[in-house]
Image (cartoon, rainbow, N blue to C red; front, side, top):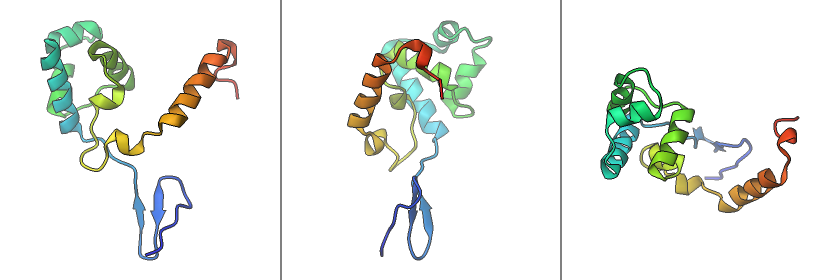
Length: 124
């Protein structure tokens, strides 16, 4: 079967179009957060205080998979646990970050960001 990549993120074939985007698995993400907390000796109330959350129930909802943290909170927790944000989230089987990780592209973007003056960032 001939597959073409006409549109980023989609594989077109004669029979169907498959999405290669992964959906976040909230339960597995909650379990990962729980494991990082256990390994770090950090409890839900510690996370609540660290992120200045109004109630600890927010953290429990993340751990149960009911909700997921915002990007800001994921970023802060990645710094707290000394891991990448991708390490905190899980897309289920077949959606591991290493499958999609382009180290060279990341390196190039990081170099360009370091070279740009802050005043030019965000200018279109």
